[in-house]
Every structure is written in C-alpha cells, then in structure tokens.
Amino acid sequence: MTSPEYAFRKEAAQIINSGQSRSLVLTGNISDLFFCGGESGDYVPLMNYLVEQWSVQGTILVLYELNAPIRFVREEDEAKLRQAWDGLHEDAQQHAIDLALARTRKQVEALRSKPRTSFDACMKRAEGNPTFALEFLRQLCMCSRTQIGESPLLWEDLLILMEGGDVLLPEGEISHLGDVDRQRISVCLDWFSDPGFINGTDTVILLSESLSLLNNRIARLPQLLQVAVGAPDERARLHLIHWAQSRAKEGQELLLWDSAEALAQMSAGLSIHALLQVLRFAEYSRKPLSPGDVIDKVEQFIQSQLGEDVVEFKRPGHGLEDVVGFTRLKSFMQAEFIPRIQSRGKGALPGAAIGGAIGSGKSFLLEAIAGELGMVVLVLKNIRSKWFGGTDVLFERLKRIIYALDKTMVFIDEADTQFGGVGENAHATERRLTGKIQAMMSDPALRGKTTWLLITARIHLLSPDIRRPGRAGSLIIPILDPVGEDREAFLNWVLSPVCSEEKLQATARDLAALLEGYYAAAYAELRANLQAQLELRDQESLSLEDIREILEDYIPPAVEDTRRYQELQALINCTRLQLLPEEVSRENLAEQKASWLQELQQLEARGIR
Picture (tube, rainbow, N blue to C red):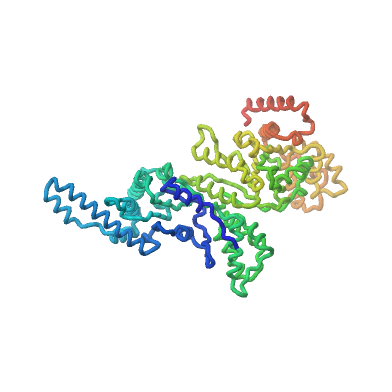
C-alpha cells in the first residue's frame, strides 16, 4: 500500500530550502486529514502532518494555535530558545549600559535596576494574547539570527507554524479594523519585511483556507508566497480505503458493491474527512456500501462547502426520447455532442453554449442530455457573494471541487447574468471572477474531465472571451422553434391527452393555423391548460369545438419581438452550419447573415434588446 504523495509539501520544502521566501501561506484543503508514513501510520490534521514531516535535525519547530500556548516539538528546543533569549537580552542590556556610561551615572543605575523580561513570562503572557504572541515570535526570530562575537545565539533554524492566519490577520479596510487587528497587521508587516528576516534562515508558515481571507496588506507582500493544498486525488482516496480495510476489526469488515478502485473513482470530490465518515458508517451499519450512498455524500459535501444557493446537483429523470421535436438537433447530439462529452482524449468537448429565445426548450433539452449520460451535473446558481472577499473564497472552493471531480458537467443557466463584465466599468471582483472562470474553461488539465454548458437566451451578452473556441465557443448551438415535422410532433403531443387517437390527426390539421407562432414553452402550457379543462368539465375527451374555443380565448404574451431578437442572435453566433435552418447553405450563408444583421438593426432601432 503506497503512501499518497502530497505535492504541496514538496513545493513548500523547495521554497524553504532554496531560500526563495521566508514567509509562506498554505491555502486550500487545510482542514483535511493527511497520512503520516510508516507501519503505524495514521491520518492526522495538517499541523500534525507538517510536524511529523519537518522534525529534522537543525530545525526547531515552533507551533502557535489560537487560544493555545506556544509549543515546541522537543523539550530541549525550548531550553535552547530560553538560553538564546536570555543571552540576547543580557547583551542588549549591557549595550545600553555602555552607551549610557558616557552620560550620567543615574541613567546607568536605572538601567541596571530595570528587571529583564524573562522567557517564561513572555510564554505565559502569549497564551490567549495573539497580538503579544506574534511580537514574541518575531523577537524569537531576531534572537535566532543574533550573534555575540562570532558565535550565534542559536545554531538551529526556526520553523514557525501558525494556524488561523485569516483570524489573526483578518481581511478588511485598515480603517475599519479595530486597534488590536491593526497592531497584529503592523507586527507582521515589520516582521515579514525585515531585511534581516528575509535574508535569514528562519521561516514562518501561515495556514489559511484562502489568501483572500488574509488582510490584503499582508497578502499583497511580494515576499509572501502561496502554496495550495489540493483536494485528495484518486490515489489518495484509494490509499484511505485500503488503510481502512486493513484496520477493520474482525466482524466489521468494509462491505463494498464493487472494488476499492471503483469506490475511489466514484468518491471524487470528497475530502479524506468526508470519505472516512462514509467508510465508518458502512462498517458500523454492516450493510454493503452502494453507489447511491457515495453519490449522496458527494452532493452533500459539495453543497456544504459552497452552499445550496451557490450550487445544486441535478439528476434529470428524462432523456432524449422524452424530448418532443428537434429531430435534426437530437441526431446531432447523439452522433457528435454526446460522444465528445464522454470522451477523455484530446477530442473531448471543453464547453458549449446553448442560445435561443426564451421558452424554446434549452434547459429541458440539455437536462435530457445529462439524463442520457448519467453524469454528475453541477448547476452553478450564484457564485457572487455579497460579503467582502466572499466571491474569491467561493471561487477557490469551487475550483478545488471541480479539479477533484472525475467526470462532470457544469450547467450555468442564465449564463449572461452569472458572470460579471471584464470592461473598465465592471467591478474588480467581477473582472477577477470572469477571468478565473474563463481560465478554468480552457485549462488543458480539465479537458476530458469537465464540460462547461452555458445556457442563455442572450448569447450576445456573453463575453467574447467566453465565446471563443477552446471555451464555450467550441460549440454554440441555436435552439430554434419547431417547424415542419417537428411542429406536427408538438401538435400531436399537445392534443394527445385530450383527443381520441382516431381523431388526433384530423384535429391537429384543423387547429394548425390557430397554433402558428407557438414555441416549446407555449405548447407545454397549452397542453397543461387543455388537461385542466378536461378535468374541470369531467369529460373523457374534448371535441374540436371545445379545443378551438379554448385556443381562441388564449392571448399570447407580447414577447414576439424580443424572442425574434434573441433567436437572431443565436443564429448569428452559431458555429455549425448543420445546426442552422435547412434553407441555409454554404453558398447563401453570407447573404443570410447579412439579412439577419439587418433585421437585428431594425429591432434595435425600435428599442428591442
């Protein structure tokens, strides 16, 4: 059972050993469990893992946790620091006395009578006092690099690990923070910017879920480097499963529906903590762990990380066979769209945008695709937070989850409202969010793993950067209103619940003129209305006259011009000739586009947007 490898530890070690930086912040999955090697290895919190890995000769590990005393891994390390501290302050006091000798004997006596601040007194005062603790730790670093003559006060290097960096140094405008928070920020600014510290051999490592949660005066320091702690990959999850199986007591063995490898693959997105909860419950319940249990846990965990108002999971109960009409489009979906989503190679589809007028059936059709594939469907609802810095934190959590998931589709409905702008008038947060989402869409590491599906009635309002090839612009699909045989299929579908089978075709022909201009949502509403009238009248079917009366009573909403404008935008932005209306060919495409643009300009002149 090979131990998992953690890339963040290697990256941090390289930074420390090379002297590239003396102040680091570990961000990301810092609240998870990590495996310590060895035969008696166990899963431990990050702080314990770092202590186990970095307790080496020549380094003194100093641990600081909020509301806890400053701790040292070895007792002899504390004794060494105490001795160095005493030497530093004795030397400093003697230096002050020597300077004062040239002045008055009264000053010298005052200096000699002034009590020294002892190491133990500082340790005690630092407990429960984060501001003093930071200053004390800063002075320990000064003590570490001080020499008396040619001998250093301390031969070892200090490695200081501090939890709760975002609580110690909270984000916010400095003018809005309290005096205590300002003082801690000032201490760290002096500490991390001190040339002696930067060029020394001591290192400070902060733990914070996100760099955005640290005060920006600290986070923007060029010498503060960020190292991301990623979510567990499939290898790490598989190790945990084998580890749990090896430690199970007799009679409490872990029961799986399939192999450990299948569980490791299906549990993508879970932290080690969350997966361990699943395994422990399975051991306790003595029931075989099912795929449904794992999927439920994945959904629950992701929603707990992001919030139900940010993301939801969809399990569509319908497939393409339940979609009425759209004959040509469904053929394209089955022949190319679905295979490219399923692909894991270079031909995999990174993303697609689905445009079309309101009510044309865009979301229902894409959900049918997801139902056919049986994939995880992650629906992004709102990733912009009202709290200062909250949007950046939400994005970082989302990014960790998406990179951890194995094969998923990301739905973004009403995509034109989900993203901010990138222009000069857009807020800085919106520009950052849009830029980061765009970068993820085109990341080669996600190709074959994640497919981005953007659904919008206003395709023209999406950023051109999103609509380019390699992102959603790899495939822009227009959803058009049904015509010809597709329209007949909709007519039959609408009338089938209220009309007998022998009269269905004749009734559809007689009513076709009354249904001119109807679209998918309007057909669905008409079908529901006819079924309601059937129940209200307590009849087995409706006659032609009854249906005609109901249709003539209906007044369509005044959205025709808006729908036409949106449909024209979808046609102009379409990236496949075969998805345009049948009358459009390669020969008349330029002429047809010019006609569409002219019609768009006419609608815009009337104020239609």
